[in-house]
View: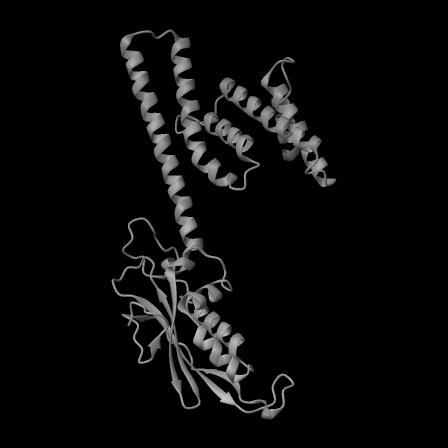
Length: 334
């Protein structure tokens, strides 16, 4: 009975008192939203008719809600909320086709909310007949304050989107110590695992292994002779997930020839923003050795082949990377 009673009251509240009223427009918006759902169910999302119905539903909702709030305003803490509802509907109408519609809606909504609220107060003051110099000056101050607060809210929303972008594109920064930050607070006390450098180090090993494992020794020697820091870095970074912080990771290697092959030290160095003045880096030692075996269908007398063996990688280290081997190219670590 309670449900039926609520439904009856809701239906009575939307029953138009006359054809030209806000109730009529709300009913038109509800009908448009129903058609929107039905056409979407039939797979007509991209059809022109579906797009037209969507626009009509948003416009009818905007007009109906705004008109209804003028007649019967909803208030929270004494403030009318219809400008916020109307501003949100307008933003959805304007930005719904954009890829970053949520971002543009978030930064535009507070400003548009403030503009609608200020415009409404100004029109009400003009309609009430308050023409004194004091009331006009007071109204100007109120409008300026409302717009400034709206712009401030918009900048904070934009800043929140910026922080969210940083957390996605620069996971290494978020994995660090943010306890001294004035605007970033870690919700969970445990920091996310700092695995980015280690994963890049493993990508370096995978690249080297693809170039030397099972290859003829003469081919491997030629590859090592031509290997440069730039080639190593570009070849490995192509294999990585595309984060914005990739540009801050420097890849380096140091090589030394031995009796049975080559010693290879791989370094992944973080040059991005950090809370410490010293560099952070990861290190792994590998060895390229000659083996005599049948590989790739070649007979054993075709010459030695190469194999790669690596020790476990290090944890995050601080300081200037050092090696007793020769760095690739003439780097700042020489």
